[in-house]
Structures are given as C-alpha cells and as structure tokens.
Length: 446
Ligand SMILES: Nc1ncnc2c1ncn2[C@@H]1O[C@H](COP(=O)(O)OP(=O)(O)O)[C@@H](O)[C@H]1O
Ligand SMILES: O=P(O)(O)OC[C@H]1O[C@](O)(COP(=O)(O)O)[C@@H](O)[C@@H]1O
Ligand SMILES: [Mg+2]
Image (tube, rainbow, N blue to C red):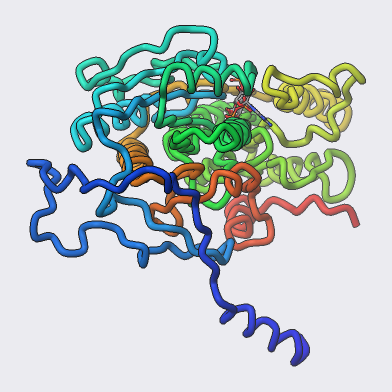
C-alpha cells in the first residue's frame, strides 16, 4: 500500500460520522410520557431512563449513527386516540407471533392503548378483509405458536387501496412486519401517507428467515432456523456414514443469501462442503465439486454436502419459461438445486466408478426450519424489537425500521433498510472459517 492510500485510510477512519435522522410527526403536540405513571415500568427518580437526542448507535458497516431505540420523555400520541394496525407479510419466520403478541401487550400495558387491530393475510388484508380486534387476552399464548396467527401472503400490494383503508379506518400507527419486499412496499405506503399529509406513524419490523436484510445485526427467527437445520444435517451425516461411498445432501432455505447454510455448516461440523448463492461452483474437471467429493470419499468413505436453495441457479439447465417464473411478489422461482445435484452426482459416479457402490441421500427440510415457534433467544429478540417499535411510534417517529446494530437497538430510515441487502461476505474471516472447517476448495477455474 502506498503512502497516499494509507493516509486515505486513516482519514476515512476519522471522517465525521453523520447521523441518519428519521422523520417525525412534528405537527402533533408533545405530551408527558404515560410511562411516568406506569406502576410497573415506572421511571420515578430514574435519571437517564429516557432516551435523549444525544443517544445514538454507531454502525461500523454503514459508518452512520442512528437514533437509539427506547422510550422518550414525551409522546406525541394521546393513548386514547391511538388506533393501531399490525400486519405480517411475505414468508414465515419463527417469532412472528411473538412480535405480534409483544406489540399488543406492550401497547396495552405500557401506553394504555386500547384500539389495536390485526390485518389478516398480508398487505391485501388492508382492503379485502375486516381487521380483527386484538387485546392481551387474545394474544396471551401466541408466542408458543409457529407461523403467524394473523396469516400472511405474497403479492396483493395495491398502494392506493392500502392507504385508503388506513385513512378510512383511522389507523394512526401502522406496524408492518416483513422482509425486503415488505419494506419496499412500506416505503411506498410511507411516501403516500406523507403525500396525503396524514399523521400516521409507519413502522417496519424486519423479518426474514434468510437473514437477507441489511444494516441490522441479524433478523429474528434466523437462529431458530439454523438450530432446526441441525437435525437435517445430522440425519444426512448418519445416512452417509452408514453407506458405502455415501453422500448426504441437505438443501436449506436461502433465496439470495447463504447465511442459513453457512451458520448451519459452522455449527454442525459434520459438513464437508457448503454451497451458497454468493459463490459460483462447477461440477466437472480439476478443482470442481466432483473431484473434491471423489477425494473426500477416498479419505472418509462418506461426505455431507449442504446447499442453499439459491446456489448453482446459473448452472442448472432451464427452459426460457422457467427463467421467467416469478412468485406473486415478483421473486424468482428457483429450480430445485438438490434434486439436480442428486441426479448429477449419480450420473458422475456411474460414469467414473461403474459397478462401485454409491448412495446419495437427499434431505430437503424446506418449511420445517421456519414453521416453528421461536427459540428463547429469538423470543427475547422479538420482544425487544416490538417494544422498541412501540416506543418509537409513541414518540412520534415515523418511516423507520427498528433493529439491533452491534447489539444496540436503533431506529433506521425505512428507505435505507428497503434498499440494503445482506449477502454473505465471502472475503471475510467467517467464510475462511467455513473453508477451514470443511477444507472445501474455492471452485475458481484456473
Ligand atoms: N417493490 C415492491 N413494492 C411494493 N410492494 C412490494 C414490493 N416487493 C414486494 N412487495 C410486497 O411485499 C409483500 C411481501 O413481499 P415478499 O417478497 O413476498 O416477502 P418479504 O417481504 O418477506 O421479502 C408482498 O405483499 C409483496 O407484494
Ligand atoms: O413461502 P414460499 O412462497 O414458498 O417461499 C419460500 C421462500 O421463502 C423464504 O423463506 C424467504 O422468504 P421471505 O423473502 O419472505 O423472507 C425463502 O428462503 C424461500 O425460498
Ligand atoms: Mg424476501
């Protein structure tokens, strides 16, 4: 590195960190925070309890500061005037019901909010079904259930119908729980609400089992999914080890990111090779997957292969119509990389090792890793997310997403989260760690 680029690096290190401000419903009047008189969550003589404008969270990755999440000195909504809508959109994720439960119980117990409604079946529910009234008694045990008891769906995003419904039903706090697609929709809803000059707080709570939402540390439910994936990997290992030249092949969720596959591989230690969408691989020839597996079978007699569902999509042959296929939200529909790999592995073995015993056991746990209730860590995370969201909305903030950054909860502009993705960084030490655990090659063609 030359002197000037070294200087540049040092300058970058000390360059002023800018604050990412989030919109505020300034036209509303400040009121004392009802938490002052809350018998349980009370704050009397607790100096420093309330978050002030000096409290920020620094992000190393974006090099921005964000407003700290938590209760403020003032609220900008009179509790009796608050009308809440809660909606869940997109695919399932462990912890959805916990977030809903904690929103309802938190709004009710902390801020005395009594008009809380669930929008059913995703964005389309705003205009196609009646909202359901929620209270702590109804949601009491929801955290013990997988999925979302409000139901969810893909597609059905009709901006004007959604905002019309928010307006006509008088909702003034809208909590939107969803992934990258949902957040892009939430930005449009927020902009339209601003355009119509409505005093409505729009709050995003990031959800995705794939962990593909950027800026935040990780998304809720992800750790539960990694834990569930262990059962599939362990079964694949047992099957592979008990066969002559046995291969256990496990496909895990991860549309555009390989976080689940990566973390499941690292925690399992039974995995010989992990394939993710962020890294190309090839099958035949020097340095290819078959050569690697051949070697591993010679050394160990078996091998376990974990593949993220979005991996290898460029090399699986497909028809033009398959290339165009999209789900209702516009996400590409993938071909089954596991089925394809299994068939290619068999062809390879029959060709190169005719007459020798060989077994591939393919395990695809699909929805089993996400259609479960959250584990303890994710449940706690969901609670903190919900409470942080409530405090932010009551404090008059809008157009924000709540999430942890370096472990501290922050309010991040909705728009920033909607356009930030979170691919696996294959240049950092975590991926090197995967390679050192599996000893797999980089699949770089020389
Ligand atoms: N660019 C977009 N603009 C508006 N709405 C969107 C956009 N992308 C997705 N949506 C809507 O967000 C919801 C969830 O999106 P989806 O991609 O299925 O799941 P996720 O939010 O979990 O990524 C769907 O109702 C979909 O129509
Ligand atoms: O529920 P569907 O429509 O079958 O979608 C399955 C997809 O959902 C995911 O769990 C991700 O969902 P989100 O984008 O909604 O977070 C992927 O891992 C998987 O490919
Ligand atoms: Mg998504």
